[in-house]
Image 1 (tube, rainbow, N blue to C red):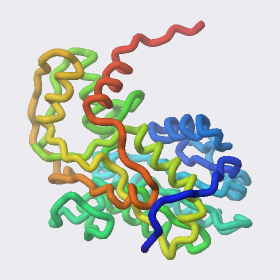
Image 2 (image 1 turned 135 degrees about the vertical axis):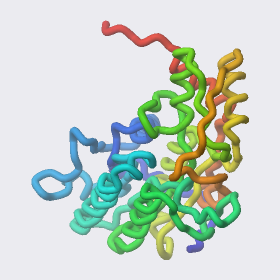
Image 3 (image 1 turned 90 degrees about the vertical axis):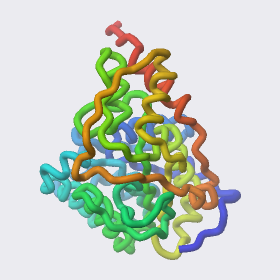
Image 4 (image 1 turned 120 degrees about the vertical axis):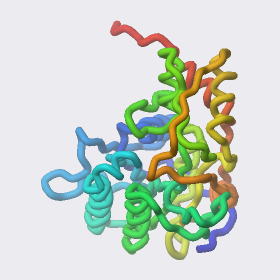
Length: 309
């Protein structure tokens, strides 16, 4: 799929936008970014599901851009409970079927996984045309979601294959990535757990939201594309766990103990992304370096909780 480079685009701020998964880490930050940009937004969460009475909510049928940033499982849990991973696929499929009733052709933007869908036999950095071959249940579902969206001809499909997203306010629950776990460990004085020795691509949530907002702003361009638009969104920089450990020590201002564990069966080897296409199509580049991003993340973890007024 070929697109012209990013240039002057219309201002669709008045167009209605829907965020499915609006209470999650990316969803919360995306809603803030849209609100700051003056974009009218409706949000759907587990407490406010997008399907009501057997049909998709009317607000979705009126939305010109639909961001799907929902997800119910982590890579670790997907390996233990593949049924739950499959449910993520069917949730998206249910949305796509419901959007057949829209009076227009909505732009549907899927938060994909740049860390799990590419063939591990290929060498990074991965471009969008690199071969795909997931080796985990999570990656298989994320790629299946991409294909389901590509087959929904009544939509304008856009897939953003995200690197490892991090930032302030991210949950440190099981399977939610190394950075929030390490940030919590720094706060409580525990040792950092280093699992395996691979290199990863870490992208700040503000940069991810900037890319999502750029997609909305170029909706007309993307809607005119022949076929799905797939773009990598990451820092484009590989970072080993040892390097990440050193970044954490600088951000924390002290030495941090580590505890090493072997890689797990579903862990990938080195993964980082080529993000040149996103720069060309969206006019987007990552702006938050890892040092600054980690400093902000640790500062947010260390901040005292606000008492109710």
